[in-house]
Image 1: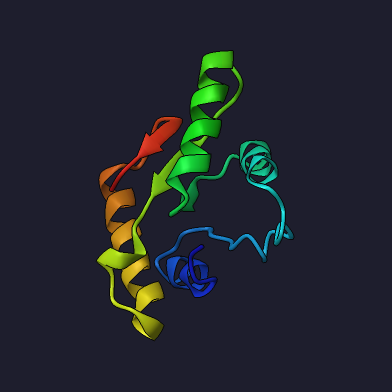
Image 2: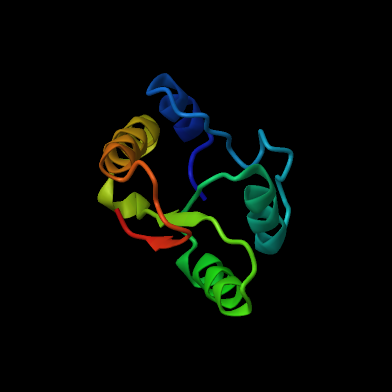
Length: 108
């Protein structure tokens, strides 16, 4: 849901970021993306609140391993080629303020 260039912009800030495509998960269902994030101990950044909030809630309730899931809204950022840099700046700022986010839902 987010431009793949966002991962490259985050990398410029020193983050180890991958787009879903770069992770080899293009076209995978959300549960597979979540499971891979758990296996690799990654933070998920998405605009897909409905699905990822449900997956996170279900996993937390079951006592299954979870990761931080950060929700963003593209509509709060400039369009076009300015979107990825704006998202990256926003996410980097949030990560500086939250260096150890808890597993669960976050709205930066």
